[in-house]
Structure formats: structure tokens, C-alpha cells
Image (tube, rainbow, N blue to C red; front, side):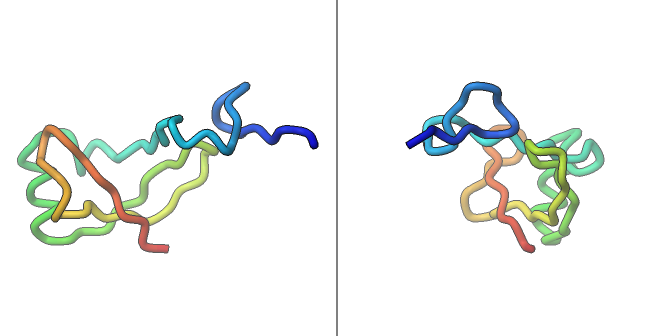
Length: 77
């Protein structure tokens, strides 16, 4: 059976769970730790760019994030 590959990373197997998923977050949401904290506190949804170039609505997972240090996104739809 032939291996399948990710469209975002050339030569990376799609079944490789160690490959990090890179999602681009808009600057107005994450430019400073204060912006991140405000976005987390208000639960503001934002469009983030996925590795394949598409966009999806995300929010910061406030229970697992540290503003300016560690960010975890939760996809809405």
C-alpha cells in the first residue's frame, strides 16, 4: 500500500503524530502578551490560517494557555 503525504510538508507522512501542526494566528490577536490575554479573557474567535492555506475559526483554550509563552487553540468549526 502506498504511503500518503501531507500537503503542507513535503515528504512528511500524514500518519506521523510527531510532526507539529503549524497554524498562523493573526497579529492583532497575538502581537503582545496583553493582546493574547485579552483575547483569552473575552473568548474572542479569530480566523487562523491552517497549513494547507485554508482558514478556520479558532479560540484560545484558556485552561491550557499561558499568554506569551504557550498557546493552545481550539477549532470552532
